[in-house]
Image 1 (tube, rainbow, N blue to C red):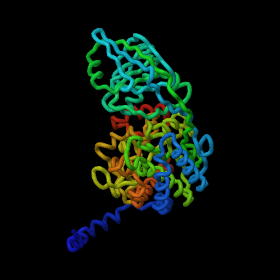
Image 2: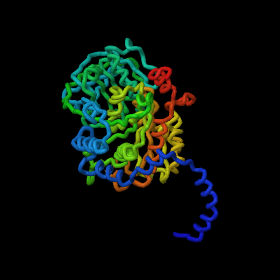
Image 3: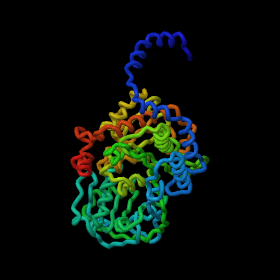
Image 4: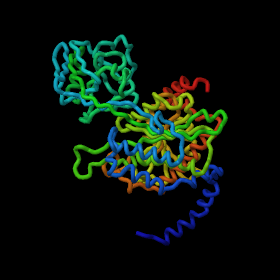
Length: 491
């Protein structure tokens, strides 16, 4: 119902406040104003409508749709005249394998002094690059919420993992550390199983890692909790493997500072999504418009803005678009382990997710933007200051800012010590990981405003003499502060 008289009165009452706010709003520098003016909502609408079209079939990793997306991204950088920074032009090629476990011939038996427990093949998910077997092995129980035992306590034995509820990034990292300690097998429990083939990095390191068996059986998990000492016997058949060449898409805008040009800021997003739902009905294509064609487009648009305006940052800016985020942060992890530009010279990483929708599950996020771990580093303050220039509220979500820190492509960089965050327009939205996440539902005008904030913040980070630092006063950053000291030394 319209109430024009009330609105008019309210507007008169608020007018002095609005004028005061306008007067107090910080003004952009000429370079910042140029970047802001070069950001186009229509340009990003074009990116997202193509990347999230049915033609690309949800950009699964790997898939033909993902290949098409990578070629599109490279063509956009090529059209800008942006310098390629991959191992093959704009592509950083990563050798992976699509692994399909074989269930025929699989066996797993766990035995205590009082009982023998057989595990059915349909209740497990096996991760292995080759056949493996073991008989009557001592079981070492490891709590992933605590300190890991020494290698000598694990090597050659069966490691039974206890997870701290939801598998956090930290718990997954510890699980992989256990696999590298030389156990004969790693056994864990999981609330769900995936029937899809697995994606694994090819090479000697993965081939040497212990096989793992995830069991979906809550009753067995309860029984084993009080079973005492255990022995394990298993037989894992060789999986079926198909090689896959995957691609991060990477370009660089070289800096102009005599010293700072040799330091790098990464702006990134993931261009993959989850493909086609094999069990759905009707529309089964997971288009992934907001997650994360939107973040991918933000990266492209910031690059375009720098090229169009000729604004020259002092530090170099790397524009990186990742494969395989939805499968487990594969593309960003691959870069962090095989960096094009040394991580010790990489001073910040900002990753863009969910930048287009404003209909968050808690209400409208129009004119607002958040960061995961917003108070973990100085990058949050850079974004907040840039937000005031553009007129965007950059805020901390009291629950999700910390909760989501480990759930995006910033995490591998943070683990290495690089100040890194994900930037979002909203955290969860109605079509999250559903076929309804389509391009026409995004608010491109609002997305352009958020992109202007990011462009201004990137320029300021690139030009300030001192790089962004971790907030050592925040107890949640202790592991990252330590990693940063190891990475950068006294810098």
